Amino acid sequence: MDGGSGLDRTGTRSVKWLTAGVELDAGRIPLGVADMDLPGFPALFAALRDRLDHPALGYTRADPAARERVARWYGRRHAATIDPDWVVLLPFGPRTAVRVVLDAAAAGPAPRGPVLTPTPEYGGFAAVAGAAGRAVREIPLDRAGGAYRLAVDEFADACRREPGAVVALSSPHNPTGRVWDAAELHALAAAAAGCGGVLISDEVHCEIVHPGRRHVTAVNAAGEFARNTVVVHSVGKAFNVSGLADAFLLVPDADLRRRVVATLEGFGFFEGGRLLGALAQEIALEHGEPWLRSLTAGLTARRDLIVTRLAEAVPGAVACVPEASFLLWLSGAAFAGARRPAGIAPDAGIREVLLAACGVELADGSAFGTAGEGCARLNFALAEPVLAEAADRIARFAERAPGRRSAGP
Image 1 (spheres, one colour):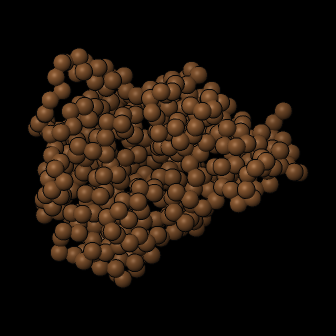
Image 2 (cartoon, rainbow, N blue to C red):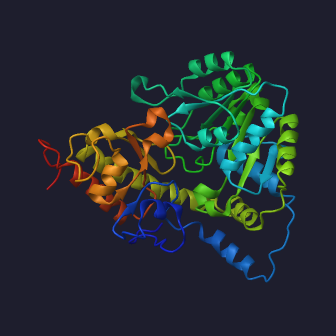
Image 3 (tube, rainbow, N blue to C red):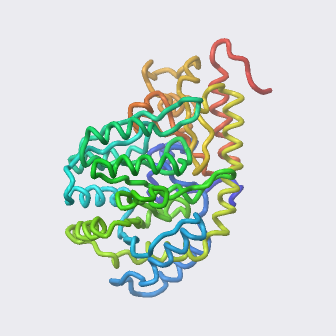
C-alpha cells in the first residue's frame, strides 16, 4: 500500500479533485467523492498498458468465459452460489445499470410503482429514479440501539401500499459503511416480491469488508425471492478503475433478464463494446484477491486512525464506525460550537464550513436524502500522512470552539 505523501491527480480531470477545487487551491485535501486516492492493482494496470501497445482498439466480442469467471469469484470471495446464466455484462457503470433495471422492470406485468430507498442512502438512486419518471419514497434507517438498521417493517408496509414498487439500496451501505445481514436483505426481497416489484442491491463496495464482518450477496440472501432480486456490481470501486465504466448484473429471473437485455439493445448497447473495462474485470477477478486483502488491511488501519482522532477531538462526530469500504459518516451537530470562518452563512452545512475553515472537503450529507441533512461523508482512502493531516486540521478547527478544551498538546 502507498504510505507516501499521496497520489497526485492534478491534470487527470478527477471529479473528486475538481469538486474540492484542489487545482485552484493546492492546499485543499479532497475527502468527498467515493474514489480512492491510492494506487490500483498493479497487475491490472500492467495488463491495460500491454493491451494499449497494440495498434488497434476495434470492436470486440464479450469473453465467453466472463460469466463463469464472475460465478467463480462469488464462490471464492463470498461463499455465494451464482449461476453463470444470471450474469449480464454491461458496457457502462453501475449508475446506468440501475436505470436499465428500472426500465426493464417497468416493461413487465407489474404496475409502475415508486422507488423505495433508505435514508440516508447513495443519492444516485433518487437521481436515476427521477430521470426514469419514478417517484421516490425515503424510509429512514432505524437507529435503535445506536446502530443503523434497515426498517424492514416500514419497507414491507410501503410495498403493500405501492404495487410494483422497486426497493433500491447499497450493500454494504453508502454512506454509513454498514454490512447488512442476510435476514434484513431477505425481508426486503420478500417485501418487493409481495407487491410484484424488484429489490435492486448495489454491491459495488462489497469487496472491501473489514475484519469481523462478511458480505452476503442479495440474490443468495433472498432465497425463494431471488427471482425478484437484482445485484449491481463492478470492480471499479475496489480496484480503482471506475473511469473504465465497467459493471455487471446478477439477474436470476430469466424473464426479467430477457427484458434487461432487450432494454440494453433498445439503447444500442451490447455486451461486446467495453474492451478495456472487460480486461480490467478479467484481471481483477482472476488475480486480484491477494491484493484486495492487502488493500482492506490498509484501509482498516486508516479507518482506525481517522475514527480515533476524530472521536477524541470531536466527541459525537463519528456517527458510526464503518464495517466496510472507505467511507465514514459524520454528524455535523458535533461541530456546532466551533467558530465559523468569516463569510460563511449561519445555516451552511459542515462541508462548506470545513472547506472554508481548514481546506478539508467532505461530501455534504444532504446528497444522501433527508436523513443526511446536517451530516457529512468522509473518504479515508488516501495516503496515511495526508489523512493524518486532514484529521489534525479538523481537530484543530473543532478545538477552537468556545469552552472546548484541547484534546492534545
